[in-house]
Image (cartoon, rainbow, N blue to C red):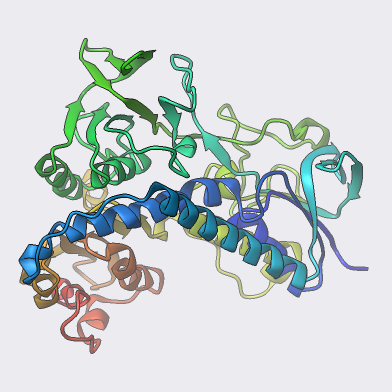
Amino acid sequence: MPVRFLIIGGGPAGNTAATYAARLGAEVTMVERDLVGGAAHLLDCIPSKTMIATGGAMSFSRRLQGMGLEEVQPEIDVEALTERVEDIKDHLSGSTANLLTSQGVRILRGSARFTSPTSAEVDTHDGTTVSVPFDAALIATGSRPRVPEWVRPDGERILTTRECYPPKIFPKSVCVVGSGVTGVEFVHMFESFGAKVTLVVSRQQVLPSKDPEVAAVLEDDFLRRGVSLLKGARAQSIERDADGVLVKCDDGRQVRASHAVLAIGSVPNSDGLNLEAAGVHVDGGGYVPINHHCVTNVEHIYAAGDVSGKLPLSSVASMQGRKVAEHVMGLHTREHRHLDYDKAASAIFTEPEIADVGLAEAEAFASGRKIRVTKVPFSATPKALINNDSRGFVKIISDPATGVVLGGSIVGRHAAELISVIALAVTANLKVTDIVESLLVHPALSEALAEAAE
């Protein structure tokens, strides 16, 4: 009899686990209440990156004079951009649903809740309730934007990140609260579309968890583009009036803008699942703790993606889903590599892009670990000059004794693509000489990788 595998949540973790387990012979039932493909993925990540790409094209068009062309000033077509965002979202959701059904996955549209450690009920969108017994279950319900008690978003002037797209209008001025990854991406996006942007930075640098040298490049670019940075300030209230919004900070500073955007993290979607009936524990933040196999405190119930409290990245969620499917189907008893979260590559889609992987320079110094740090600016790379965009650098961190690549950071054009080379080196324990001796394309931005590995 095939393993009955229940998956709650159809985002990157859920759909990867579903398709892989189905191919291995499991009888898979997936429950999704919003959008197959994942709400956080298709209602946050993909729309924001789509709009960032459009904003980036607008910014690039303003630099055409440096490439021997006349400068142009493109206008935003709100209707066309909205249609583009929706088309991409619908295409990705549809293709994910088609893949799942082609693998024999049963998809139930609705909300699930556990009724025991081996059963659940699903209140479907058509008004019926379906009982689903299972041998193994995966909780992959994702997350939603965090809203603090001191503010009430209205979806018009005071917005969460998920309420910013598809775009209804493009604001003249925006105050972004939160200087993490999501916050700086929204600064870039709105500024590219011509808004006057203020960023409330609770600490003394944007991206407080990133390399200070990396953050400095981004800060310099923000200032060059006219972005106002309120460092060392925490927003404590946002009031709406006839002219827009007023953001008040704890140090007395105030920001007046037409709109405010909250980008201060997310909270897990673990409520409403009746986890108590299954015996599954949650921590104080609502996350579902897991071990290295993504197993919860109940041996046949797993958690993956944002709800697991690990790195909130789609790539990590997808790999967790694959590892869960392997464990459910018993493949972990063979040759099996655990997911190493310290080796996950991440990117920030600002302009310039930022990407990193593995050991960070500041982390190494804080722990007293000896490292070798090499850095090459893109201004020394022919392709960057050809592109008329020489901002940023490549930094590679390696072990001085063995030459093994431990990590790296890239700031610049196509950083999200280029980091893959360093990520592969970190994952496979390659040495800097392996990168140096690779015959890379010329002229190409990737040449900076080999130079930084010298």
